[in-house]
Amino acid sequence: MRSHTSAPELEKQPLQLDPGRRRSMRVLLSVPITVTGKSKDSKDFTEDARTLVVNAHGALISLAAKVLAGQNITVSNKATHSKQDCRVVYLGNPAAGKIQMGIEFVAPSPSFWQIDFPPDDWIVPEN
Image (cartoon, rainbow, N blue to C red; front, side, top):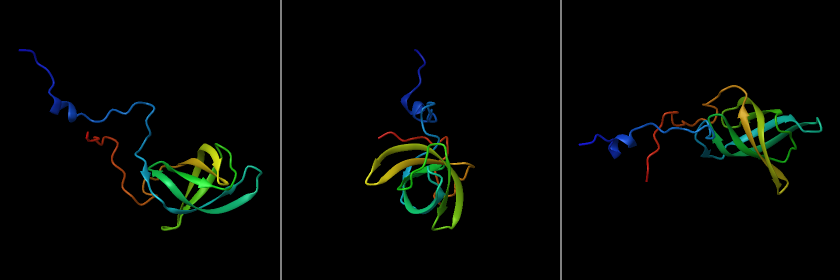
């Protein structure tokens, strides 16, 4: 009789993340924030906004302020009054006078959004 791995044993293996996967789970969460920084024409701006999606490393937000990819901004969580320096890592297409942008924390801050994210070795259940 040949030895083989049964289906239940395969299900217990941790999820293997490929290099193209995100570093942490994304969560649709609307958090009121204030964003400050300099626009691409070097003018100071302060804008109230809300997150669209958050993760342990940053967020997706939508701003009217025109910024550049790679530039630093500061995000303040209105609920906790905490601030975090961030870097713009993605700029989407303009829509309704705003641009969706991905931001990442300059320094790790997994508790900034006040939610618990699953651990890195979390096993994703199959339907």
